[in-house]
Image (tube, rainbow, N blue to C red):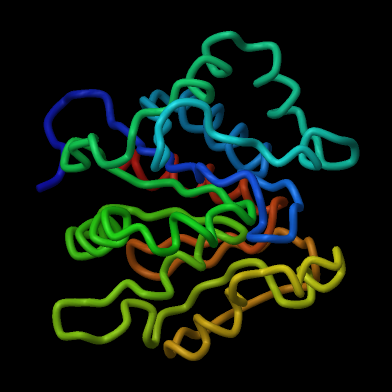
Length: 234
């Protein structure tokens, strides 16, 4: 069931609750601009954005993404915005949300989600139902890794034969975090039959195939959010 009528369209933005990369001790969380850019682009387009996470409450933001050169106009705006900060510190508990009331899903990246969202049965079911109902699913950076285990009713992987993108192995290797990952997004999605499409490291890249909208790296967060905002106007 899709949210309909003349009500304000709503986007559910799902963040990770994990702040550590496995047993490595390395800090992680959601990448800041991948929350901030869609938050502002979508709200300024007139949509309601609701932040959620598996545990609810404060969702961790990757410390590195607070630092130059990774900050953006959106992160600067977010830090000065008490309403946005309150939303990030008081995310809704994912399992308590009736997602039938949302028109679209946006999942920002960051390494934490490999340890929780990628195996969250509630989120996997949500993605399947959004896809079946042709409601947009926007995922950027590491978020497409969550698609690894989503299956259609016929048992096939949802990504089989689908054009998509996400954070490259070469990008993981460039920042020397490839050895700390639970799994490789690029390898796993290719093994599921996805048509993985990438550009040069860190270059903006948005790939749309039906309801699935994916972005490669942090630079793709804003153009992906804009593509989603435009799509919701229809």
